[in-house]
Amino acid sequence: MSLASSPKHGHALIADIESFAGVRLGPGTLYGAITRLEGDALIEPLQPEGRRRPYRITDSGAESLGQILSELKQTVREGEARLATLRPLFRALS
Image (tube, rainbow, N blue to C red; front, top):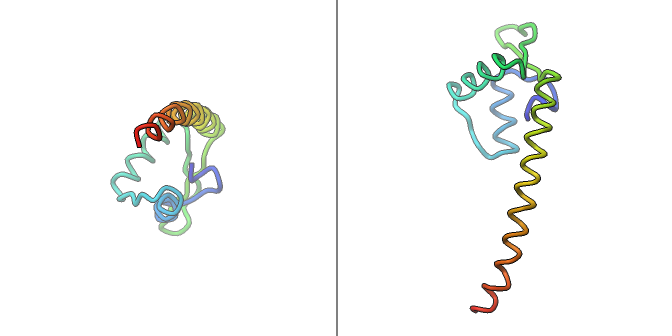
């Protein structure tokens, strides 16, 4: 999701993910994910900038992200609907 806004190198990815998700990834976790995403052609490396190698999301990656976000929206809607049915029960027990 971080690469959907712009290409980034590893350090920038770690900082961005921490800012929007509240999770600080270690380098091993990040580069393991990069390897998997690159292997699945969801991201691709760009020309190195000095010692840093930026990555960008591919068209396939953007499609995949869109599908995942759509599924998450459906999960959130279902969860909210189920929670809404519980609230009156909790109020009645109070």
